[in-house]
Image: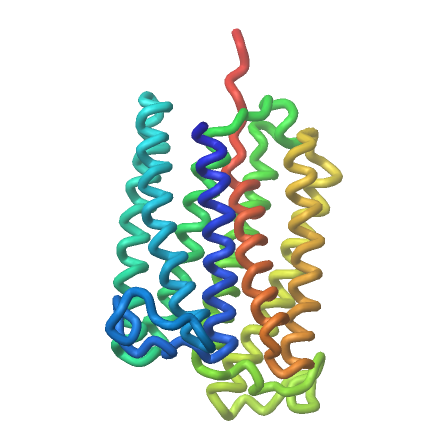
Length: 294
């Protein structure tokens, strides 16, 4: 019962991140000018931008309740797993802070720092739930987890990918919230050059996002190939294959987002795939070997 509950939380969180991206892409972030109510009520007329903004709020509120229920299930079904319960408590605190940041975002009219922090904490919560889910599953045999002792290669590959995906996602959030998404209106070049004139902060930020994307792609594809070719664990190989394919798809979505002038389907899919890549990378990093019987 614990794993289905955590799987549900994971999928609900991914859907919440997708909704958040749609809210911004449709310019609905301030469709409800007050918080926690929307035009003074909890049940406004769900039309236009209000539909997306208030749906996002309701979805986030439901996540808090669902996660609290999942935490109670963990406490009752796994009384000896204090490590999982502590992670759950940390996750609950994160959700409360997230709610406050969401309110401040509206009250202070979308400040870049708070909006970016809002997404960063959402990704941290997603990573935390992924660790909880992986750690409540069956562990792999040490001899199967990777080609080197203790499965260190798989965990290192996952850690590198998770850190880079997180950093790139935060930079992407800055690009989005500073309206720098079209600072380079052409692809694959930027202002007609491989290296554009970096005399404007928006161009600098957008170009940084592209460069980090290139670095991320090279590192993740290389690490994924090492795991696929050297790991003895089938689950790790599948995670690595999905991660490698996903990062290539993410680059394509980034190009399409610019080519189609930040069209809602493309930028929303871009955010959702970034969250999915983080989940896959954290799952690889959190894989741990089972104890070997004496």
